Image 1 (cartoon, one colour):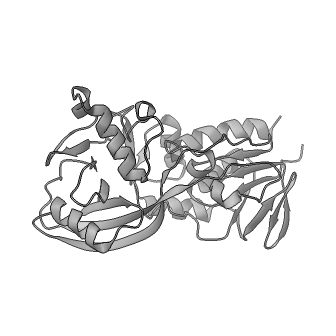
Image 2 (tube, helix red, strand yellow):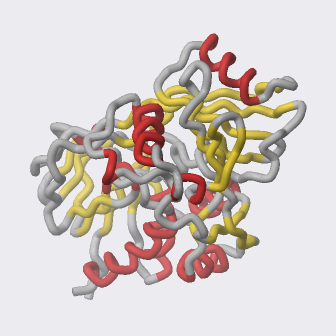
Image 3 (cartoon, helix red, strand yellow):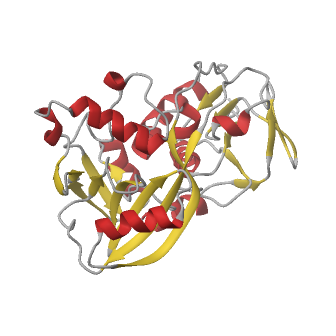
Amino acid sequence: MKPPRIVILGAGIAGLAASHVLKRKGLHPLLLEQGHPGGEFLAGGPRVLRDTKSMRCFLADLNLPHSKFTTRQGMLLRGRVEPFPRCLKNRLDARRVHADYWTKSRRVLPDDPTARYLTGARNPRKGFLRCDLEELVAKLASRARIQTVRVLGIERNHIETSGGRVPFELALCTLPLWELTGKTWFGLPSGVAVKLCATYVIPFHDRFARWDTVLAPYTPAACVHRMLSFEDGWVVEAAGEPSLADLESDLHWLFPEGYFVQWQRRGLKGALLPLEEDAAWPPNVRPLGRFAQWDSEVTVAEVVERIEGEVAYAHP
């Protein structure tokens, strides 16, 4: 039987991971990417991977050294960091804190505060794997078959690109929903992600050193909402496009002994706003990854596990 023609739209981390798993199964997917492999995976966000059996096998197959650890998450309340989510269990105002953090990180009121969870609240003791993420992306990209083109549209059995038509039997789409609006023969809702400003800060004195992640629902300028431990300092995240004055106000409050800004990246993709309706994908086009599945909880580990099911589809 001739191997199916599998096309992956997007060579971000989801597309690269899917390509590697499929190649391990003897398939030869083609990735379509107009930018650089890896996308925004290395631009900000957590510098770790979810610890699962499939993820450990995935990294071992790449001969990539890694280590296991349990994340230490805290929430900054009234000037001090307390273990999260335990710090909210006995608080009468827990629902308000959740809603305030949701509003701050998304710049919009929650549609249902009781149904919203902050990052890590469902499984605070989940395990993680730490590895060299730059090397991970480089290895995956070197083993992938990537065609540099712009995706113009998805038709019933082919992709329209800036380089011509690309036929497929199975298309795995990792592109964000907002990039596909009006480009598919089937209907998709419009999706919006809040812009994110990530600033790498090296403090002169690190009062948060014992933590891996610190959530900050309340700061003087209502700017910074999360901090992620990174190398010698912190990647500080702020939703939207904060002014320099507001960002500096919060940074001075967080690091009163002083700090040094190593780099800053604006216009990244941040929190996902709820869709007005569910996406309806045809059987031969599957969404894959956070921005196509429209689920902020989707991780690389989940992509690796899910793609095993797509292999079964590819071999009916």
